[in-house]
Image 1 (cartoon, helix red, strand yellow):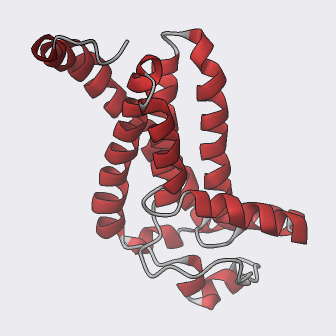
Image 2: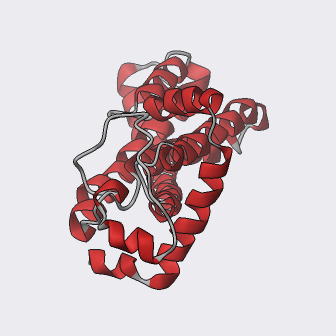
Length: 214
């Protein structure tokens, strides 16, 4: 399926976005984007830290569980299924002639270590947006939690953009990863908010004779 991405339209989209990114690269952004991209490194360090903080207080426990659910579902769809099915090579492994024919000189900026896994879709992007989007949907029931949900979603998109910036993914990998993340986050939200919380949690609380989440 990797040959599909040699389509002229897709190559041109990747080149156009890469050219924009190349035009804004500078030493300060190099440091910032490298730091941001590492926040999403497997197993999604920043998301587990945020989840742990949210799970501890009872009033935000549901949000923490939704975040973990979105992370897990998006990871299963993206990293277990799609990457291994599509097998798109990383941009630094692509035949240089493809870039040359599109009028672009791909240069590895050497900001992070190269990955040996397949490229499409972006796992950092899908898991980050999946986690943040599932949690954001949970925040909509209590608008005061949007102060947590919106910045978290913005961070997830910054992690996605950082994958283009450090040139470890094609821009179309990140776009697809964002779509997978939104779908994964929605699936997780529906499973947890519509099934786990109203059906399973009350049974557990009854057996424990204790309220475990608001």
